[in-house]
Length: 77
Image 1 (cartoon, rainbow, N blue to C red):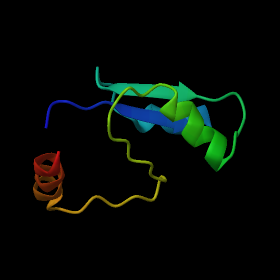
Image 2 (image 1 turned 30 degrees about the horizontal axis):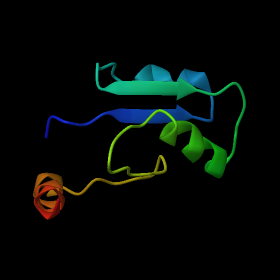
Image 3 (image 1 turned 180 degrees about the vertical axis):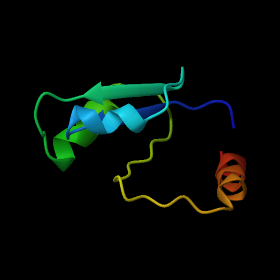
């Protein structure tokens, strides 16, 4: 899958982001203060122009069959 962008809204400590690998597909929105869940979502959504958006917490687990799932979603378009 090549047509995607990952937007990370960091409502927490900027020090945590040092573990995130930089990529041209990655946009990190570092907040000056914790905006809370809803305002964090809105901040990320404001930077998206995609027809589909996935909101996730930092405890998201991506299944090993992720490609199959994404392919199914893509076929539904």
